[in-house]
Image (tube, rainbow, N blue to C red):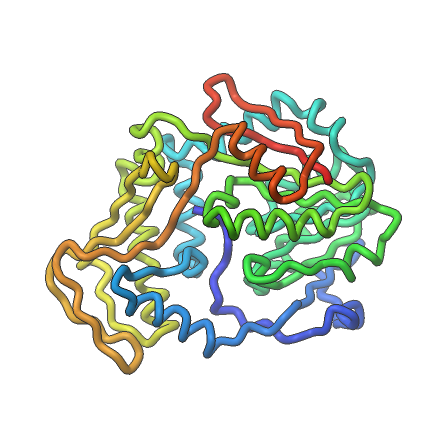
Length: 349
């Protein structure tokens, strides 16, 4: 479960070379907040891609469809659950190794918060590093102004900028970074969101980040590690059923986006750790035989058929270090908790 947002927001197309002329959106803080859109979402193409995934023999839904308003609220609840250890362990590493991590990061950087969500993980780092600029990047434009303003509240020397784009498809912030060419960028990607990408896509995203880094720039991210099957599966199938509700809610989003008629209660949440692939596989499993309208087509699902909704890849420290190396990163530091359940990496090129 990462914090990508849904595609229900409309993004207007603004050429990267001209984005700075876009109208400023202010949330009442100084300096003002700009929110701009990079790249137009082709809604017809995205809908067709979604429908195609649902009509495959092994049906799939991309994880970004989790995050409508209800999905975001459910994800916030998940992050408070005792089984979902990731936020707590990550915060613990941040606190325990804060000074060591700060020594690996540049002073007064441009802070690029990828998949920023509510932006609440950034303010301490923005303040400690005296960041010259905070850039919140997320696919959902609607909440960006408030998120970015919150992240720099009380930091009058930090400029604020929100970028609405689907960086999982394409990441190009060179024009943004060039505005402050004398300040290196730190790309912040916490929460082990990198785990939602298959390895080739993860390497491509990491390489794209590396291509943005000038001397002194860094990638700063969290990575969930391989551990006991029981702990992993409990984290994605909590006793209160919040994650199950979160998973089933994606069908309500699909109904709206693809003009489908899934009945979420006819589907069972499943989360299984595949030890060979080192990943959690989250699915919805049909509780009964059913036929579903998906746009202008119909598909039958037999009892026990499943829809894959998410992969969450887990790594070893050595394995993720090798992944970073394959993406062109050479200066790598890592910190972990005492149980080696989670790791935080800082890497440069």
